[in-house]
Amino acid sequence: MIAIYPGSFDPITLGHLDIIQRGSRLFDKVIVAVLRNPNKVPLFTVQQRLEQIRIATQHLPNVEADSFDGLTVNYAQQRQAQVLLRGLRAISDFEVELQMAHTNKTLSTQIETVFLATSNEYSFLSSSVIKEIARFGGSVDHLVPPHIALDIHKCYNHNYPIANPTTTAIIPPLQSIPMESPTGTTPEAEV
Ligand code: PNS
Image (cartoon, rainbow, N blue to C red):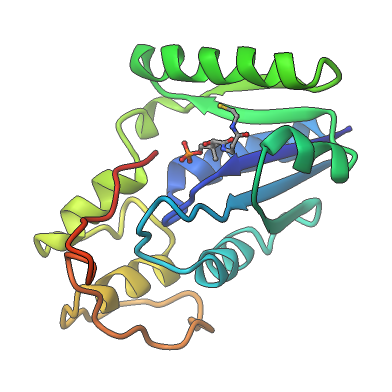
């Protein structure tokens, strides 16, 4: 059975990786699908996010990273997936996730949403929290894989020494990304 794990992943966190790792034991294949969303101002491009995910999941042979636009159920059908995988952290997630699952069910009765409860240690974690910490110069080493911590701190132009880098970042160094986009909008909060 093939599962799609859709999301923004800007950037992918240890909480997302927990869901992916556990999902990879339940399904034959897990496709981590990055939404190309023109309505959000991301920190990382879709290409950078895909590279980050590929490095972070390289030890999981049945996990693939891809991007998509439009409806998730259409993408799932296109990839012959039967399941949408989502993580649930808290009650606050539940309302939104249930609405999304019901909506998707009306769009395709063939596709089931499967929720995994996020492991306790990551129940507070989101991409937005990570960006917030990094923006103010805090360390995110304990919240994301090392290559992503490096990318994040480069984004915010921190002089950031990595003690024991475990991966060589294949992502080219990022230019400093301003906190506000040229249009004056700030990156939108997301999971
Ligand atoms: O990581 P996120 O931002 O919580 O992911 C949200 C995502 C990408 C899963 C959701 O916004 C989505 O599926 N968008 C695609 C459009 C769609 O299918 N909408 C119908 C379901 S509400």
